[in-house]
Length: 428
Ligand code: NAP
Ligand code: HSE
Image (cartoon, rainbow, N blue to C red; front, side, top):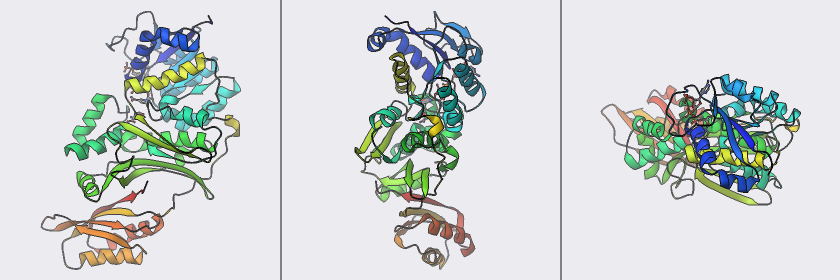
């Protein structure tokens, strides 16, 4: 039998303990599938004494992840700490410089430094694999890099953040507010160390940027993703959307157009009976469109210990089998700088405005929309207090530019109270 593949694991939280469990419990299966033993040589985390619910006996301990990454008795550095800077970045760089392959679940690190790390790895003949970084247990990185490698990819889209999908679906199901559901996500191990990455759409934006790089042969350009989070979405929006036959999802879309690469991650209304509308809880869905294959839909758990560890192990197994793939599906030095393009395709929009409850207020709003060239499909005034009235508008298809003109003009009407909420309606 070939020599064992020796792992050094930095990070023993939700994902790291899941990986330790698989390595310990499935040694025979892993050896059968790869033709060699997969072993853990050493581990690292902040606290050496914390009870992690999994045995660490037989593994050396390092307080410093950089020291772990450069140990002679590891072949693969498995980075499961998180964070785009600090120990995750330092230890990953140190591992590559010390001649190790790297497996990581860290989308933030790769979204911000993926190009530089990929070039560094490839120059030295090492690999960086990151299946767990995008959509948890769904093997979407492998699907794009390998299964669909013979396709020109036209579009990548999907729901890629379990926390946001959990909060949005549970708000509708339970009528509970954001804070209680946020707490449930923490219990389930869905949250990033900085939860603003989740609810601000940043985590999902990182994932979209990584998939776009593979799909379109471009350098990862997270800075060009048009980003919007779910913090503005209220229970009222959830209920109004449901009344209109929609559900709200944090949806990402990346496509290459004649004007350049469009990447956007924002809340959208989708038909409640569509596959995306039916997506519940922490589940993710990624839709890939290729010229030969047509459309592929991948659906599965987007977060949590078991699913994410499953994805980490798929990378470890790939390396154990001797498969050596470039990070983004082609040599990093050849990835092109994309021209960022704003998403301009017209769409209907849902608008929620709070108006002063006085004569002529609705007419003023309708006039602003008309002057911006926006046609109204439906308009509804809902229950109101003594001085203000919430008004919902569904527009016909309009461009984002026209919508922005209307949003800029609303304050001058003197009747629009609070910042209006505008959410794109996707027909997929
Ligand atoms: P977590 O539960 O917070 O665990 C982080 C681990 O890293 C902890 O064990 C922590 O040590 C250790 N750590 C943090 N800073 C360290 C340092 N300076 N030195 C040594 N160890 C350090 O995080 P997680 O949810 O497992 O996520 C890990 C990575 O996977 C992140 O990149 C995340 O984005 C990604 N990811 C997570 C999920 C998910 O469902 N959770 C899914 C996909 C991807 P202590 O335990 O001692 O504090
Ligand atoms: N916080 C992330 C999510 C974990 O909720 O999707 C998986 O990447």
